[in-house]
Image (spheres, rainbow, N blue to C red):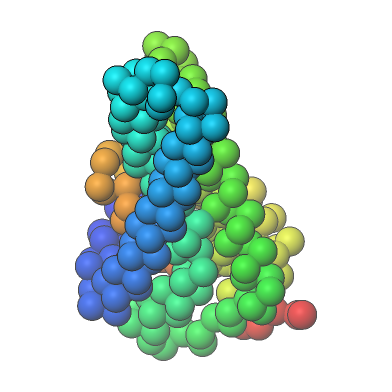
Length: 236
């Protein structure tokens, strides 16, 4: 089941409708990171000027500025996948709707979360992912432990957030969470697949759209195993 869902999600990720969302979210991500990088480098420049480092040690000043700017660039590149998840979180309901409409045309469509709830959900998801990746950046130099902790944390986080986001289009959030726990082996296996993507440069930028497409398929298949038909709407 998981392999079939993954192949269907991969096909959807490169389809024209989801590609349009991908370019939009990547553009916003790069723009946000560029603004952060420019702001931090200007802050470093101001700090050096205010402490008269430039006048006293011009060569040291230039070297420190270059190293700081390069270090920030590397750090921001490392957390770019997490930031892309934060940005893409605002488009995931649209992506889920496309997947449902094209791959499950005979099923009743899901219902998008209210805008305020969707924004809070996206902020929570992106914030948690960012914290996990920042923590991983800190412990990355610890052999084995750093990578293992990064993978385990992301597998759990990604499986939880993407599945509940897909399931919440058809059932209340508490029921979506209960369903994830009932099928924890399957959802966690899907999360491991997504966590594996997160450690591959460039490929990790596809994680948000692939993740929601994957979990739409996983949820649809798991819902058919339930003893009663899945609810077609959500109480607000």
